[in-house]
Structures are given as structure tokens and as C-alpha cells.
Length: 463
Image (cartoon, rainbow, N blue to C red; front, side, top):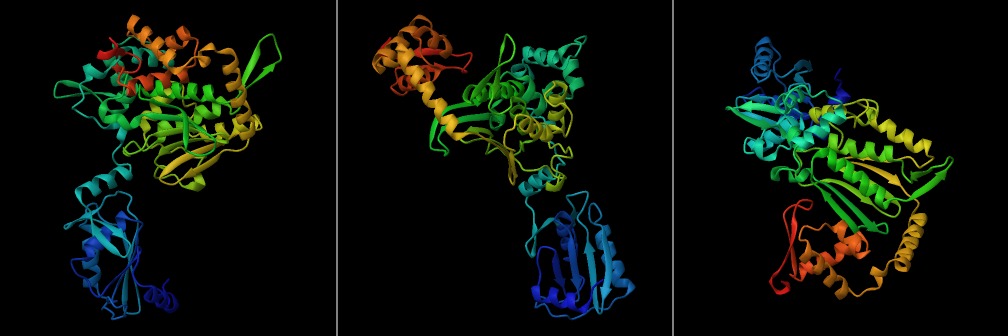
């Protein structure tokens, strides 16, 4: 209950996010009601002027009925409780469970000590942030199903999910919840586009997973980088391969076959990547999922902190999915074992390997950091570099010689892959990529089409 001491403190501090003063009941009260319901709730004090002075108001049934009518006529009705102290009427506005709320004047949101009217863009973003619109369920009718759908990707998913293929592709996609019929045409929703296209459609460019290997412990020198933009499951697997390629291995021999043990347990890395792909905020188009390897740590981050409804205290114990359809498809394909167990699986895998505990951070991004032994990493890099220099004749050749050999290989086979160049020239993938980039910048060659399906073109002066 309110008392004199509390009221004095409120008058001294003035209006704020959860406190509003009004001298009397007028038409502006409805916008304050919806603004607080759309925010975190608060209290409106009737009978206090804009100079924080207590002027008072008569408490009668007419005033109370007027306030209640205003709250009821909001859409949806705003939940309130009305009390009084001395000659002040106090309206307790609860945070709404059915946001967004609007009054006859529009949609309002509390911003500091003011109630601001929301623009169309802000209303859309607000609805998205509240989880009322699911990214994975949205359909873009500008995307032609027949041009983007890849049956081979669906077949691979069916095999992974152990689905008996007794129905046609369309029926399977419908049952998975990703194919819709509109205006006598077929469309994949965003979840369907992420899972069942060979390459990401242009409007989903931000769903790429970017992997980077840095020299040292800062983002200065990039030693290797990959941007994976195929279907979501391929991107997850390619990211795992990138990590396994660049993290340290040790070998354990207890039987006739040796066992390779990754310095960070693969199960922990896999869970972190799947978690990022499943729970990222796909409405945020300015950032990708990032997998970054430093000498002393591995960062895996995704845009979007904790999903709405999941508090930091409940993190790791409850399952709240920002993208439930994506989560369901990953679960069917065996990438999510049980909803809500991924974080504990990461912790348990690291504990079993006697590795340091992971560090989780969540603000506008969700980040998990795995610690590495920087000295061991540096030692392995030096040994690897020494072995390459001693065993690879390719490393002793001049840049001009290597580049001419690459030109010759392309002339013979324009569709030759980077990996085949490595085999033909007895080199390394990193060196081949370096020289291909040099030749491209020198305008001697050009790559046409997608990375995996395209071909090389020798430009005029080298023909």
C-alpha cells in the first residue's frame, strides 16, 4: 500500500519509464495506458501536475467508471487496477500479455518518461520482437518454388530423419509444415527455403554462416575464411569441418585403431553451432552467425540474445524457441536430441574432457566462448609450417611459376576445382586460394557461377 514516505519519494524523483503524472482524467489517458501495457507496466498518478505538485482529484464513481471505460475500449483491453491514496487516484497498469495494444489514437510505447507513438516500421519490429510473427513461417511470394527447391536436398533430409518415402515430395513438404498453396501456386516458407534449397535465395543472404581463422588473439590477420550459404544442414556440417580442420588433434591408441580427439569436444562444438542456427534472430539482417577461431579461444555467436520468455536465471533449464519450425526440422533430422538439453550437453562434454567451462554471454547477441591452450596452438602452427616447407616442393617455387601452372590447368579444364589444383600441383589449399585471388586481381582469370558448380574463365590477354 502507498504511504506518505513513498509518495514523497515518487514526487521527488518525478516521471519515468514506469511513473506518469496527470492532473486530471482526459483523452490522453488512453495512450498512457497502452504505452505502459506495451512496455513493462507502471503506475499513473491522477491528481499530480507537471510540476510534480499534488493537486488532488475527487474520487467518485464517475471518475472510476471513466478510467475503466478507457482501459476496456483499448484493443485489446488493458488490464488495470485502481486504488487511491489521500486525494490521488493511482492506476496500476500491468505489462500486457497480448501486445501490441492500441487506443483510438494509435499504438504507443513508453520511452523514458514519455509515451511515443509508433510508426508502421516500429509496430512491425515490435510485433516481431514480441514473437507474434515467426520468421520461419513467413512466405515470400516472389520466390519461385520450382526454381529454388532441390529434391536431392529433401532426399538427404528424409534419410537423416528416417522418414519412409511413401508420398511425393510435395506431400512430404506439406507434412513438414514448409510448403503452402496460394493462388494456385506453391511456395516454401522461410524454414523451407533454409532447409530445402541448394543455395540460399538472395533475400536470405544474411542466413550465411561465416567462419574465420585469425592469427594470434585479435581480429587483425585472417588466415582462412569461409562463408557457407547452402542449405542449413550443409552449412552446419561445413562449419564443423572448418573447425576440425583448424583445431588441434591428439591421438589415443588403445586398440588396433588410433582415435582422433579434438582439443574441444566435437559434440560441444556441434551443439553450439546448431543452437546458433536454431535460435538466431533471423529478422536481424545486418549480422551473420560467426564462428571465429583465435589462438586462445573459439567464439560462436549469433544475432539475438535470449528469446523472449527465457530469463537469464532459467537459461539452460528451459526450452524457449525463437524459431519453432526450424527447431522442429533440426530435431527430426537428429541435430537436436531433446529440446532444452543442448547447453547441458555442451557443459557435460567439456567436463568429461576436463576442458575449461564455456563462457556464455547474451545481450543483443548470444555468444559461447570455448577456451584454448594458446601455447600449444602456436607450437602446432609452427610445426605444421615447418613440415610444409620441408616436404612440399610447391612451397619452393616462385609465385610466377605457380601462377603459370594454375593458368595451364584452367586452360585444360575450366571446371577444375581448387582441391584438384592442390592434388595436381602438390600444394596446399591456402596457397592455391592465395594465388587464385592474385590472378583474379590481376584480371588474368575470372570465376563464373557458384563456388561448387561454376567454372574458371581465362581473360583475353592470357588466351
